[in-house]
Amino acid sequence: MSHSLTIALAQLNAVVGGLDANVDAILAARSAAAGADLLVTPELSVIGYPPEDLVLKPALVAAAAARVARLAAATADGGPALLVGAPLAEDGKLYNAAFLLDGGHIIGVTRKHDLPNYGTFDEKRVFDAGPLPGPLAFRGARLGVPICEDIWTPEVTECLAETGADLLIVPNGSPYEVGKDDRRLSLAVSRVSETGLPLVYLNRVGGQDELVFDGASFVINADRKLAVQLPDWEEAFVSTHWTRSGHHWTCAPGTIAPRDEDPADVYHAMLVALRDYVNRNGFPGVVLGLSGGIDSALSAAVAVDALGADRVWCVMMPSPYTSADSLEDAAACARMLGCRLDTVGIGPAMEAFRSMLAPMFAGRAADTTEENIQSRIRGLSLMAISNKFGPMLLTTGNKSEMSVGYATIYGDMAGGYSVLKDVYKTTVFKLSEWRNRQRPRLGLGPAGPVMPQRVIDKPPTAELRDNQTDQDSLPPYDLLDRILMGLVEQEQSAAELVAAGIDAATVTRIERLLYIAEYKRRQAPPGVKIGGRNFGRDRRYPISNAFRTA
View 1 (cartoon, rainbow, N blue to C red):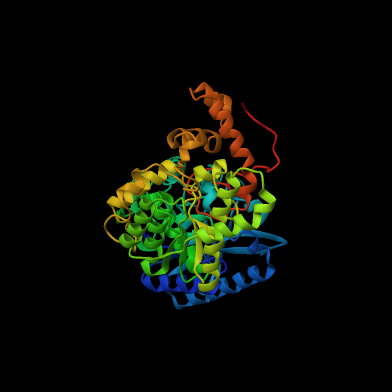
View 2: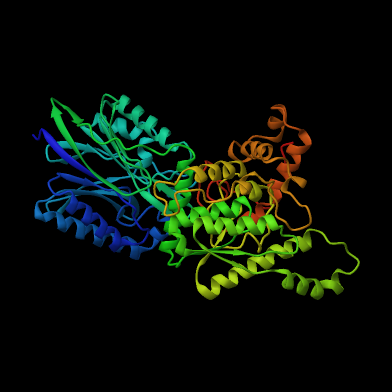
């Protein structure tokens, strides 16, 4: 019976569908783990997580099986064993599985039992639930391998403890959301307390469409003390050293990496998600409209931090309503960030549309129609630059605006990705203040301020008519976001918000705007999930909806 083990942990950024690249990364980590007994990788590390309906393709499942066989063969050299994740087709069913590979063979398999089917998850759509698992025998130890959701309730870990597991190793694909890292740690402590077993929590990192994974993997001993903490947001590798005393395994204390505090974690979530989205979809960079306002300034800063200034192209598109302050502030932002700025005036296009539509619009006063035309001219111009030169158009609208429909479909909503899609306006202010004081740890942008303080301080405005501000037609953003947090994040009724002291007419109006803007949000570009109820994956409301809670 072995009295010591070295277990290496590889916190990887797997590419969904990039099987060969993922296998190469696993083998590179195995080389780095020379001398270890076992290398552990995150959930579905062979095919990437989440695969969504891609995993329903038999060709992908067959290709994954071939890659697992290749990884198994690599362990014939007597080096570290591997614990890798891949789909398993078996007896007409498809499982989310973890494979233990050693000595050139597959020596154990665990099938995920508890399939998440809420919020961003719909694994029951593509996978079958495995049976309650037992431990896997490995070099004198018995490894319990619950997969991700399997530890969110006690059933699986209790079964593993009762059937003789010595320690728990948990491969994860757990997406980031605000405050989730503390919930994960608390959950792991609960499982350790219930079973009396130490626990290894290994999470993936990187962006995948609207999800981003923060890593932040850790090891907790049976005494509920943190033994090892990996960094968040970046790939990492660590060897953990375990010893047996009687029937109990203990991990020796190791590195405790600091975790991001708020709002650095939100900023890094946007940065990593945009970086991986742009790079993995083959774009040379991004282009965005830089208006002199705070949303576009923050979006540009995130883009420069994610991609570098040479891959960010900003375009100022003034109209007759654009102020001198906005022109100066846009130029200052681009100068502070070190990125390209071009100016394309939209006045000629506005006049062309006015002349073209004048016979049809005769006798009708100007209204939001003409304002929306300006926004659509800008969207058309930016898409033309994107088509001609190749950079992806980055959309700059925030969650507060998208919630109430204060965004122009086919105008400022046009684009390929939005880093602010799940960020309320009050958080935009907080992030901008933070970024002006501090460079993000993974950022490629400048160390100093990235926008003039005036951009943060001045009243937000779309400048689509003379003397316009957002607060002409919306409540102050601190009040608006308070209402939206209740309606969207907490699913409160309008009556509950009124009972909490908010003006009834204001709540009723915002609820109506929220519901009638659903059709716009269905046509919005993807954007990174930040909170617990993002539009699209988490919150799926009918477009045709007559229900009101006032």
